Length: 430
Image 1: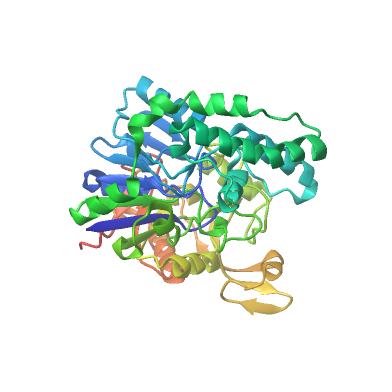
Image 2: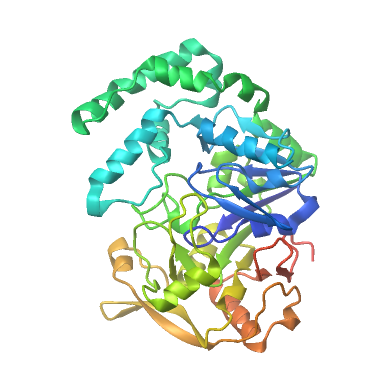
């Protein structure tokens, strides 16, 4: 059996699809195990660009079975919107499986997400307003609606009625918004049931059987380590477990079945939304990184905050997840910079931190301690051989590997699927 977890090693948007692409036709299943339609993957195949928000990137690989696991929250409107657009472009989506235990995002949670974020003012988290956080909250307080509930209308209506007792009080009395009725929520969700039914499966059973058969299963995280609900920069985080630990709970597969844990990190770093960001470049250099890297959200279109590579975060992510391999993406974006600073430690009130401060307050006040590396002028876009990189680019990669705590097994040199240098087999068979 081969289970491979692909995990973002920063604040998301690292290009996790690169690792999936690198595994190519050796993949049998690709599983999304957390998050919702608040994180996007942009996949470039030839001249075609695909922006996926809810679906796992494996849906674009012929012969691969894509799976939406029980740890995902599903906006059914977005699901079928994405499927229809892929069908229009000739993509076979018939193999998609959706866990019956996954929770659905009802309209009232989208409304609550948007209005509560606005009312937070300066304390806003920077959510996408898609109802994901409130739906995870419902899951934990046991008033959520699951995919399987759509096939028992009596149960569905009971659950909606119970949830609306509190939701409508909040919307009407606290936020001066309109109330929702049981009928409008039920009718909306039931309108998807017939089309959804053939996709619904006991995905945990299917995945475990696939692993027993010796097939390769890739677990693809949404968001990233620094946005994890437990291990990220709380409260400026997502609402699910985006680290390797989330694989088991979000898919129903034992941790013993995950053989490789691949961390994805950009050659620099970006962040969307609010929260501390020690190496942020709020100047023309940051804008240059943004423009060269096309750093605008796949899901929201928001400009991403940009900064130099942070090896403190890289080591933290390697430790939390147990990375066996790292895929470095977007090395080509750093071309033309005369020097490239790398954060090797923090300074907080005169004290040096070589590892992540335990206190969120300390992290918020952390100032980066940089080591500078010489840059390169050559355009390295599309290079697929490490020896063809400029010497300074090779030295930069080797330094990042040493600072990060895990081997770099692949390097992205452009947006296309084949713009990649492979140094080691991500399945560990080298």
